[in-house]
Amino acid sequence: MSAATKHLNFRSILCPVDFSACSSAALDYARAVARRQRAALHVVYVNDPLLVVAAATAMHDDMVKRSARELRVFVNKSVRPTRRSRVSLQVRVGDPVTQILKVARSQGADLIVMGTHGLTGADRWLVGSTTLDVLRRTRVPVLIIPSRPRRRARLHRSWPGKRILAAIDVNGASTHDVTVAIRAAAAFGSTLVLAHAVKDRATPAWLKNNRLGPAGQLRHVWRRMVSLAAVARRKMATDIRVVKGSPGELLGALAKAENLQLIVTTLRARRRWFEPKRGSVSYQLILRARIPVLACPPRWRLP
Image (cartoon, rainbow, N blue to C red):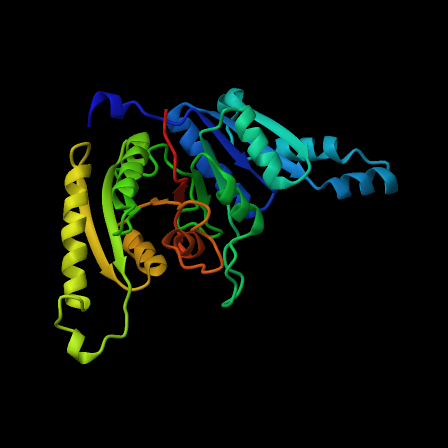
């Protein structure tokens, strides 16, 4: 790893919370990253303006001040006193997404850490409107912590460990995906496992042995992944994995099988990702992964 790449890091981290167990898990990860990166940690809670007005009218209660006290108690459960000097707390009133992004800009945040409640039923697709809208509008990476992260014990400061998994599309965006994965791995001092999931498709018998059939597709994917890994190896050690099946499920299973604790994915331009199709690899990973997913916006550049 080159000296210039080695010293890339996150310097300012924002963690929005809502006092839920899920946001408590997100705060654990935000604290772990902040400690490792020696970054400032900013925690924000956004009040619903209607509730603020209702509380003031019906109970003569200053809900903002009460929320600030509750936020301090909530944060103190996760952040040790010796580390609290670089933690700032804010309570805002308004639309959650707008306020989160405003705080991110004002604090110069280069990473947002959020929890998501994930699926609540077999037919539910949305990961949560706040998380979804932040992903649509963010200019910095968002580290998404699932509602049931695989590791809930206190995180070691070396998280996410020596290797991270990067979900790669084999298309015109592949080289960009690898570039983003390299930046993310360098920020954590990790190496890469580039992975691609080839979707299973019903194939007529006459096409099975054709170069356009499944076997030919697998050969094409493998050659492309070898080429992409060669690019990544100029910066760091890189392995390749190609699996067959649903990307959201199999890439998460692959990460678990190899004890990888972070998946990196690149979001597509707003006109293409998280539209009604709901079929992007990023969407499936965020929806179904049981380990944290670092979702990087299309034009992300780490300083």
